[in-house]
Length: 115
Length: 111
Image 1: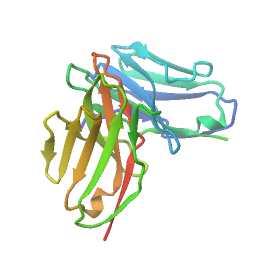
Image 2 (image 1 turned 180 degrees about the vertical axis):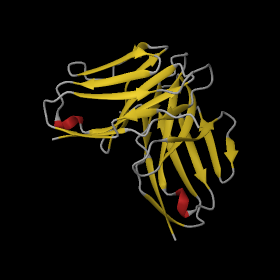
Image 3 (image 1 turned 135 degrees about the vertical axis):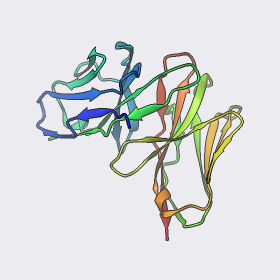
């Protein structure tokens, strides 16, 4: 089965440190999403890309978060500087988005703890 | 107000029970609807798409009410293995593919 691969699976860091999360989408998928999940807020959309171009990053705190897709096999989400409130599970999902169809496949997530 | 809302539960039901979840959405331009299942400490996985005429997959039935802007999921003859969090997802019209999720409804099926 094709899968979305995320690294790291777990990350514990101290406040103020830079954190970079990586995602390898499924080959052939044209859209990549970054979501953040917490108990309080649920699954929040941070940013997404279509054919590597950013479509919407309005869900992302702009001052400390950045998302890029340097090539078709890699999407990154960077937090600099990290804060305790960034502690969450970050999911990457990819899909082949066509009219009337939008099924996403999620990666296993990166569990971030900021102390 | 969140764009997609669900009752977080938990819903505690005995095995064999029928249970239903609702999910409301605020954007009338929403186009496509889905139910995802998420097991504890795992990623969400697609359970089923929701079609305008309603659709069924085994013990699961999904329905859409555009006039009232909600979707529902009905689980019949619930099994212990159905215990999970059920997330509804809404895709806006247009081809951007933006998919917004509800907070999820937790189901616990007891023996």
